[in-house]
Image 1 (cartoon, one colour):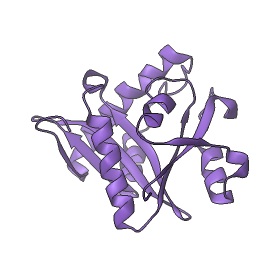
Image 2 (tube, rainbow, N blue to C red; image 1 turned 180 degrees about the vertical axis):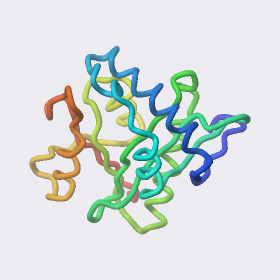
Image 3 (cartoon, rainbow, N blue to C red; image 1 turned 90 degrees about the horizontal axis):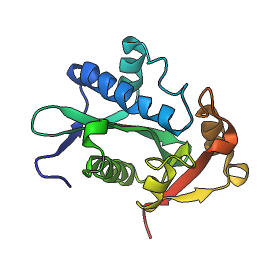
Image 4 (cartoon, rainbow, N blue to C red; image 1 turned 30 degrees about the vertical axis):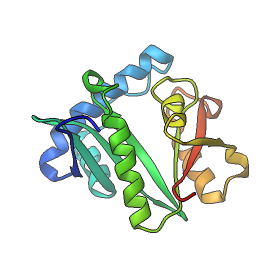
Length: 172
């Protein structure tokens, strides 16, 4: 974990900073062929509801929030709904620290697997998660709840083929 990083539960006071992180991180998708991702940022009230209605963790450096992870149960799986790190802080371990904290939450809820859907060929998506123990799973053979969640996360301007379902076993 990076020095001086703190992972903690998000609070209402964090919403503006996390909204800004999400907007900045989302704009990176345009450089990878997905200009519609992040083109219309969430209204802040909708974003605040998303954070409030899920398990949301924040990564902070010494001064401010620089990333966050939103997760929660989907059937018998813990689902990583969003992971965003400010582009100025990418590559410093904040994303990895957030993933490990989400894994700890899932284990605490006695869930055996962490799942997510992400872009297949975007370097800070599927390749990033693969290096952290996630494996691609065919959504067509996945349990219905996982498949439905996967389908619901295909964003505008992308196709199902652009995305992958990934699972990480939490107990080996």
